[in-house]
Amino acid sequence: MIAFNVPPFIGNELEYIKQVINLHKISGDGTFTKKCNKWIEERFNAQKVLLTTSGTSALDMAMLLCGLQNGDEVILPSYTFSSTATSALLGGGNLVFVDIRPDTMNIDENLIEEAITPKTKVIMVVHYAGVACEMDKIMDIAKRHNLKVVEDAAQGVMSTYKDKALGTIGDFGCYSFHETKNYSMGEGGAIVINDSNYNEQAEILREKGTNRSKFFRGEVDKYTWVDFGDSYLPSELNAAYLYAQLLQADKINENRRFTWNTYYSELKPLENEEKLQLPNVPENCSHNAHMFYVKLKDLEERTNFIKYLKERGIGAVFHYIPLHSAPAGLKFGRFHGKDKYTTKESERLVRLPLYYGLKTDDVAFIIEAVKSFFKGKV
Image (cartoon, rainbow, N blue to C red):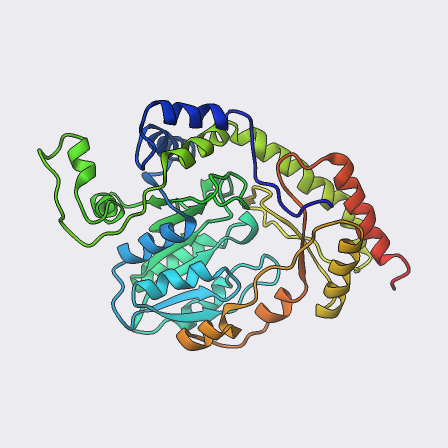
């Protein structure tokens, strides 16, 4: 069986974990956590980065830092993971879903402004498959309406928009280092703070409401409880695992891009014959090959396609069920405008196996299986 995903392992993870154990410091915010923060800051030219327990907790922090009040509205796409929405609910927000663009599966920037009301406080964008949303227009809308922008860049580590790293464009950016992501620490994430005015508040929020970070920097002679907070510090063991991969980030990225490009070039003739659709990457975007998906004719054909591949030992899967049609989405949100593409496009999409170290022979086998599914189809 060719698995859909295999968590990345680059080789030095165990050695770094052993170092953590020998230092007798396995709880959060130790040496490797700080190394990861610094690597991300320097590589992506980010103002401040704080590793978190998950991509979800990074989103939670971002929404809490936005200062939502009960009844404030958050505009977001429905085609995303539940974490995008639950983080807004944590801050007391109401969800306003808008439609996506069928070419990128990202929020349609041209539909955001008409969804804004006096209660709107935040625009949440999701960079699907590591391909950027149209950030110039979104940031312009936010500026004119005095709104915060939170980038859910869970899938976007190492991707860019006009040479800017995803996560560094809005007010806050959020990464995931879950085992399904390009770079993993098992469970983990990071928040990017793009306005230094929020640095201290973010540290307090992350450290259970204390000014402990200032104490360890020698800025106060003791630390105490100063504000609301929670526990968002990942274990040093997890951070050590991640750091080994960050040091080899380009190697991992190039390997994934090679697989992505192979899929694209080999399956392009099927798109030319209008038998399927391939991913679209706008000219101003550089993507990280987080996933490779194809779109079939409809839900029925997709179901048959997944079954066909499974029978041949290939793990191919669909993705999100639109949130606005889920039980919690119906309870906590509303869809503004018409659902022209969100449901329709989500029912057509299927993801092929893609991970660091996927064997070229397996990629060739998958490609041949996809081609054979369409043989004889008009």
